Amino acid sequence: LGLPPARCLAVEDSLTGAVAARSAGCPTVLWPEASAPMPKLEGALCVRSPGEFPWALLPDNPNGSPRPADDRRDANTIP
Image (cartoon, rainbow, N blue to C red; front, top):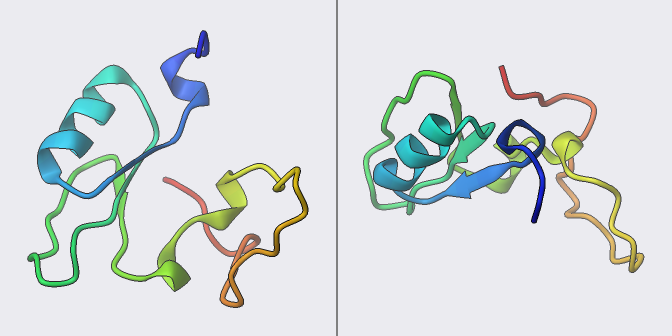
């Protein structure tokens, strides 16, 4: 993409992928499968449902598609 890692957002469903993304310097959201235990990863935001996802970190959708009904764009940030 030609962007520095700090300007990207990694969304991972495995601890291994999230560790790699954090090591690369990317802000990271860890969203494991519902049946998986919720891991802890320093520097990553761990979410279990769309309502916990940091929608505010994503740019507005240029094609006009609506965001999820539980969009909390103003309430979530990555630490």
